[in-house]
Image (cartoon, rainbow, N blue to C red; front, side):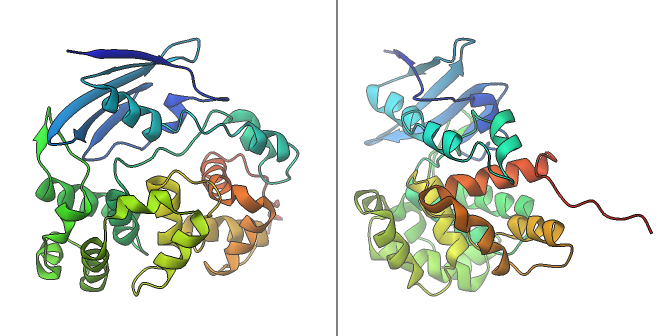
Length: 285
């Protein structure tokens, strides 16, 4: 039996904007539509969502749990209107907020998938990191309807570092991922405040501030922990300052945004990529 639900996002929301470059081994997001395979108890389900012209998200799923997955993954209940109001006149983000106001970061199906993304993406090209993530998920989880289930802690814990190495993940990062997945159920991090999660993960060898930010933003759906040491933000800082900026120097860009630093990270990167961040003019030689 198919469950059909019409969900009204809280605040401005654009599935087309938010889903840009969000497809992975578990989901396809394109043209304002979302398709994913999700795990509900001991079975796999397909979910589908599309945004109507009036903003409503129409969801088709096999169960209410599938609808709940879409609600969380798309961040439909996490209104960011206060962020838009508070920083409307911000010298860096003002124009980006005006043009991309419906953007929200899309969440992974499990916290374990966010951790996998975080360790795979450390200091390597984004396309290569996503390729490693896809390869590991396809090896770790079952497929349904052409898409794989998001990995759980148990799915990833059964690998050895050598096995993950053959799938493309470096030995140090593989050991960190397996250690955490074998230590506890990562989904339980959703029950803890962001500060406690950041402190817990920050003590782990092999996890830096950027990785913690990915887990908080994409795994837990929290907006307050920024993507510190992000290489894209370092490139933005370099363009702003007219010199090469080290990733740790670029952390200063997030300081004005306080509890919205995670969301600000996404908007800064999106605005920079689209040429919406005002940069100093370079004098002609």
